[in-house]
Image (cartoon, rainbow, N blue to C red; front, side, top):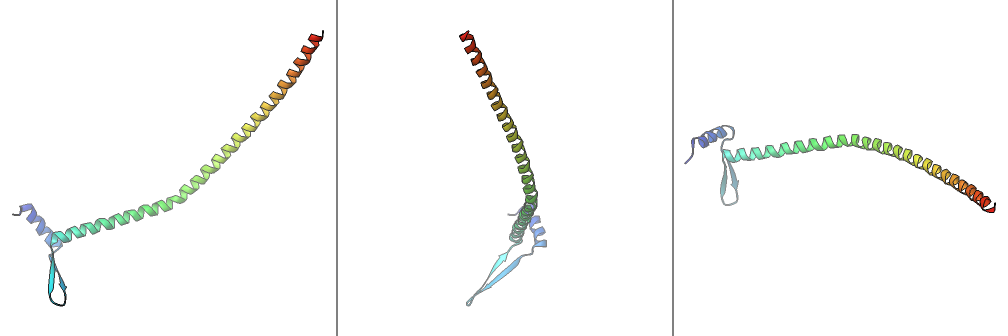
Length: 124
């Protein structure tokens, strides 16, 4: 038993997808497959979904390939900025090392002077 909604749906689908018969002939006999309107509507909807998915996937791939150039340029700019920052930090490290070496030399000189003074004090 069909409900009214099913009947109305079938009538609506029948308008857009009328029943078709696909004949298959062999050497000895002929058979047919009946394609109801519901079957055709499901096949149409499935095909539409696949085509829509293919279009969206292609668009995403194209946008990604177009945007990849911008990403590469941004990566190059970031790399250059990083290299500049590393050079600044390396120069600062070298200055600090020179300052430490100079302080060490001053400390050694002061230690020698103190040692000389201590020797004079002990001698006197």
